[in-house]
Image 1 (spheres, rainbow, N blue to C red):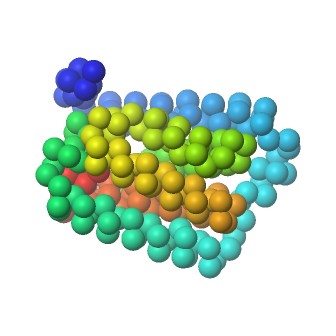
Image 2: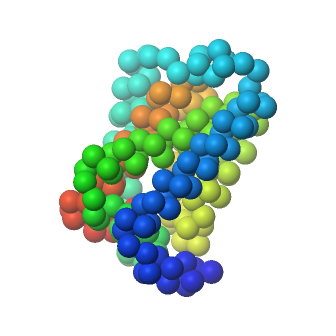
Length: 195
């Protein structure tokens, strides 16, 4: 499966791969809305998950995102590229395109995934189920031990932050910053195998 996925990635242009990401995230968004309508009593409950708390946003959202990125970059320097390589997917998605496009894509991904995995799944089924499902959705990371450990660690950390804050703004910020910083490092060529 990994070889066929890598072969498929080689056939797709950066633009086509980005389109696939937009489509898959839109489908996750649709699943989120459907699940939320069944699992959450009313929209007031959903809106209560979005509130402004500067301290939580700064410490748990912004600061922890920068710590995670620094940890990722440090681990990437210690482990060979083959341990971090996701089949060239992130490289191909983010090496081209405008900075605005990259930022919007990362914001959309973070918003959809955190609303689904924290706001809907973790709220109803707990951190363990949400974190495992989050890792499974990132299937391309499952065949590489370091990537798998990193995505599981990130998922549990985001789940823990959500457990502490009950605030989707905080976890969306955290997820967005991790994604966008690594994506921009790829785009600028400063870290060629950042994932």
